[in-house]
Image 1 (cartoon, helix red, strand yellow):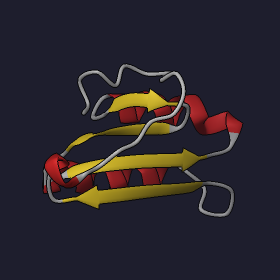
Image 2 (cartoon, rainbow, N blue to C red):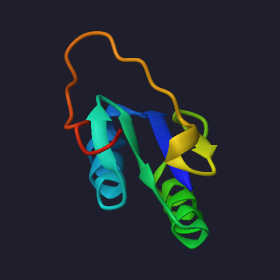
Image 3 (cartoon, helix red, strand yellow):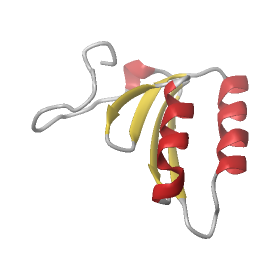
Image 4 (cartoon, helix red, strand yellow):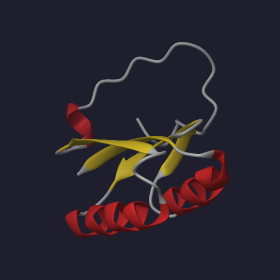
Length: 87
């Protein structure tokens, strides 16, 4: 499945969360990563994120689509990450 992860976490955890997510996904913008994951990988990512964040201070959104071909994305402005390999 194709996922987009958007996070807003305490500054004390932001680098750790970003580095972890980059092991599975492509960084496309500040606090936004996306890419394909298996169901098992997604379970692992969610579990690890729960362990490394504080639910009273942090917020993470995970958008899922069955396949990238159903995702339509419009971009305005200069991309911060390398989106050339994403879509």
